[in-house]
Image (spheres, rainbow, N blue to C red):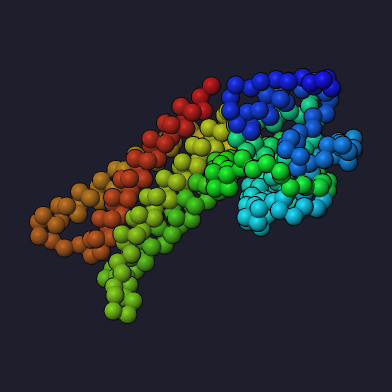
Length: 321
């Protein structure tokens, strides 16, 4: 304070909360952030700031390229945590970063509103990179030396690692919901096909597997997961948390509630008709070829039809202005 520093108190706890308040209070054209635990050298920040003059929007200090003092970073963070988060950030946002968890960074204050940072905890480090990449900001890294912390670290490997992973997954509904859902849907259809081609089941040595039950489970969970992904994606885009991609633009242009409801009704009624026919045949003492498979398919159509209809209303409710 004697050197002219302005101290601001943030009531909300958390690494991210403190930084977000600091960014809002900053007055300079360039904001430099760094952990005040003597793990970074603030006496020479020119190498961190210079890339901003060359057109970059966000500069990260790469500790692996600058050098790590002995015992400066736990082995779990160095060889597991940071590399895994680096990979996920590259997978979800397309930006290649060598040290996504570096606490020493610089960026233009004018870029701060576009980042729309929200994370209250340590996951702010990942959020900043993901949002910068998705808004088209140019990101680069410079070597920075990392020193051993003298006092005990407040980092919790499991808790903070989970917070990073949770944020990254929630920020990527395609990977969390849509892709697994589509995979399970295809697997369910394939399993149903096998069950119809081999009504007596698939024999594996002395065991016989009836795939029809797995097909119903895979298909119901897969469709539900894909629908949840669409809902999460539309919700995130409506709130400005995710940029609109080609699929969202197609949805906004062509989606009609009535069409989806019509499809849902067709699926639901179709499943009900198949169930009714099977029930009538069985109660009259008759027998239906592949009756078990048809019954499972009918139940699946009922479930998928109901899910589709309710999800369509939910999407419209979320996306309505």
